[in-house]
Every structure is written in structure tokens, then in C-alpha cells.
Length: 227
Image (cartoon, rainbow, N blue to C red; front, side):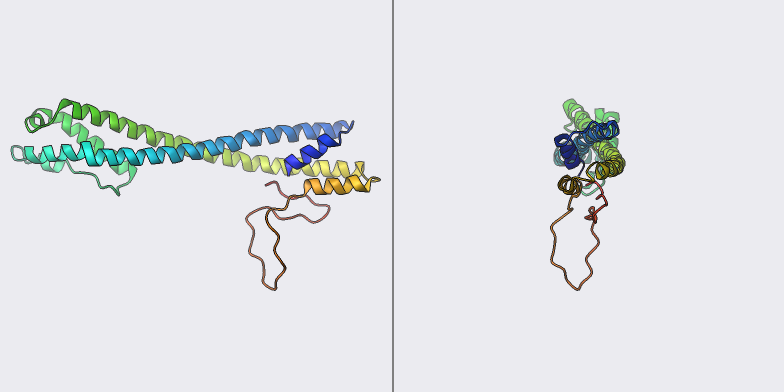
């Protein structure tokens, strides 16, 4: 709606300073809205990509390095039985936090009992690779949190801006109604510019329509909420 109103105003310029001032604020709001939409989309994409990458890291850890460490500990447990409880393979269905915590604990125990485990097939490289892979896991979790925060903050700001844009269009509506009072064709064009239908129109029925999540079509003389 705001873009439609902006385009109409650019096509029908006015020397009225009050209208120009409101239009400038509208254009600024539209530019900010477009930037926030990009931020919101970027946050969603970061969350999605980090979630996919984290799934791959967890599968690689569980089927590779962690499983290998567990089998080494099982063999070493013959010599040191307490190692059995120290190295438990995390479930593939466990939460990210639980998987992260248990994996880190296994790495710490691997370093603490390195001398014993090396007698049963542990290589120093395995612990280094495990440490690096867990660093990747930590980074993916941080990216998910950051992406979610960007998405949420942008959404909150967009809601605030939407209300402001509607308010600005209402101000322009009052100005233009007075401006086009004796120009019915332009008044009709303005009415069309500020009215946006939220979705496809359906035939009337006896049933009550379901509540709409989007903005409603405003009756003549009123302004539709910004999409």
C-alpha cells in the first residue's frame, strides 16, 4: 500500500509543503522497511543453513570420531573399567545442547586419559580433529542464535514501521481529499492507490467467513492497514 501511495504521489506532485514532508517520511519508511525485510530474510537463511550444517556435523561426529573413541575406550576398559562410563555415544535424537555437552565431556576425558587410550589405538590426531569439529558445532549454534535474533528484531521493527506507514497514508488521505475535492477523477485514482486487497475475493455464501490473518479491504474513505 505504501509503495502504491508513493508512486501515485510521485506521478501527481504538489507544491504543498505539508504533503511533501509526509511523502518524504513515507519514502524513508519504505526504504527502511525494504532493508528490514532483507535483514529478516537473511536471519531466516542463516538459521536454516546453520541448522543443516549442524545436522551434518553431528552425523559426522557420531558415526566417526565419537564412535571410534567409544570403541577405543571399551577396549581400554579391560585395563581401566571406569572408562566405560566416561565414554557414552550421544543419541542422534538428543538436543543440540545435550549433544554438545556430552561430546565436550568425551573430549575432555579423552585428553585426561590419553596415555591409556593411546595404548589401545587412539591417535593424537583424533583428539585434535574432534576438538576442531566441536568448534564447528559451537559456531553453527552461535549462527543459529544470531540468525534468530536478527529475524525477531527485524520482525518487531517491521510491525512498528507498518503502523507508522498506515498513519502517514491516513495523513496523506486527508490532504489529498481536500486537494482533489473538485477533481473527482483524481480522487478516484487516489482511492484506488491507497486500497490494497489482501487476498483473492470469494463469492458470498451463507457461512461466516473465517477470520483473516492479513489486512482487510477498507471501505471508502478509510485506509487499509499496510501489508
